[in-house]
Image 1 (cartoon, rainbow, N blue to C red):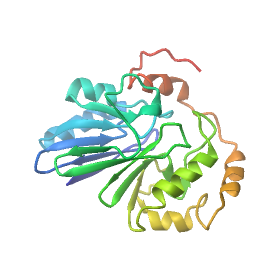
Image 2: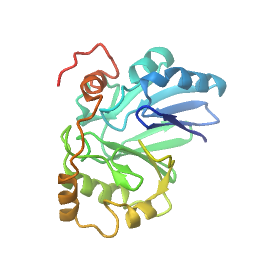
Image 3: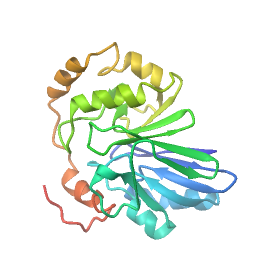
Length: 234
């Protein structure tokens, strides 16, 4: 399997390229619109055909590259069915499987940061989007966020994976590239140390985070698969 972790610095977003080296079929997880040329160059460099672009949720901090990739690489946009994105080509539910060559991608529904968050498991790796971050988690104060739901999602869908499962998050702001389920279950600042559900809900209630800087542009664009001409409404 070919694997590349890519980084968009303005929003500190990680995008992941995975490809079957036999069939040359590929997927991109959480592509960013501004980085399209980088993705297309990588695909050409390795002789890959992009089959799917997977968004872990409807992002509020950057515009997805799904629309541009569909137009220029012929890929299909994949999101959870609760995303409210009518232009999605494939709307997954919990347990859905996608295949590219010998690679199997399992969708695990992990709502709480948003109502449509989905993590993707590939072999001993899990791509958690904004649900589980390294030493943290996604905020729960907008886009149908709910702290109790997020706690349940992480414990039931992610912390139930083997300890050595490698965690690849949607963002990191300190230069860290990956972690492990065992490490996060034990040491995550918000969820580790046997943190109770009630304590987690109380902690998330008092984060006092600023309004997301790009949400008024990114959210309507992403509900249209990355169409920046979509009406921008608060």
